[in-house]
Length: 314
Image 1 (cartoon, rainbow, N blue to C red):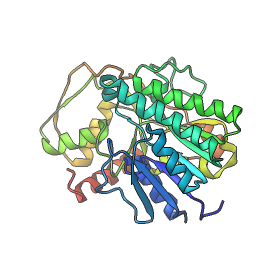
Image 2 (cartoon, rainbow, N blue to C red; image 1 turned 180 degrees about the vertical axis):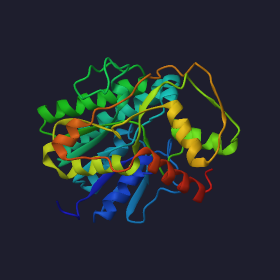
Image 3 (cartoon, rainbow, N blue to C red; image 1 turned 90 degrees about the vertical axis):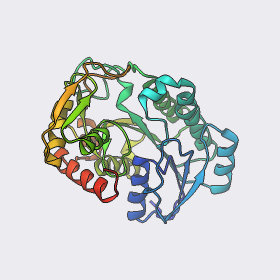
Image 4 (cartoon, rainbow, N blue to C red; image 1 turned 30 degrees about the vertical axis):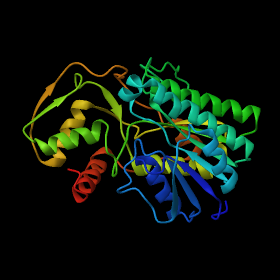
């Protein structure tokens, strides 16, 4: 694989995509362009000097078409999206434009311009409420949120184009990635709340909700392996830490890492579209590509909290 290849990353100022840019640069790829509309981004910490950044919206086909014509990309990491489930339920039209229409535009331009490979960031939300756990890639897909539906559309379209137009496409279903640069979602929100008030904490739900957390470097490793291994073509992979953790257990681990002992109040109610158990089987990506998570939750929490403190986020 030529390290001078031109690479497009959508959403490059966001949490996961910014780490993807850093990893590519570390591997010797420095001819990278990011497109971001900055809706969910925080570019205070995210920009890499070896990457070029452009402001723009992937739902704008004419804008994208000009970029593709001018830049002559070889590879595309389509990681940009609205990933906020409550927001997607409140503003479905924005979610559709970003996640469905934007992906439609990207994939059609990838075909038109003979892109060598497309990596697509999908989500555990495509599964909906589990029929069994851990969920493998053969699990029925019954998303409960606008977000899950729009990401499933991206998966299905990419896989259809792989068959119809010979597009090299791979989707990665992300399960609860966390780490430095994260600016929202349950793990960071809990850390921020506990740091602000170490005596008491209110938590949505019962605390029995199950999640499967992946430290950001492990998630990025999965994308990079899929990028460089031709066996990934036309496939969909779960990516997670491979270990279930309840919200109560997570709160206890965060409290331990912060060296506090707060009083916890669970509301017993959560936001619409919340899933009770999101635990992944990662056997397929392990067996097919040799992926193996390296950072467990205890270590990942310590690394995350250290970074949040150093950057005055908590």
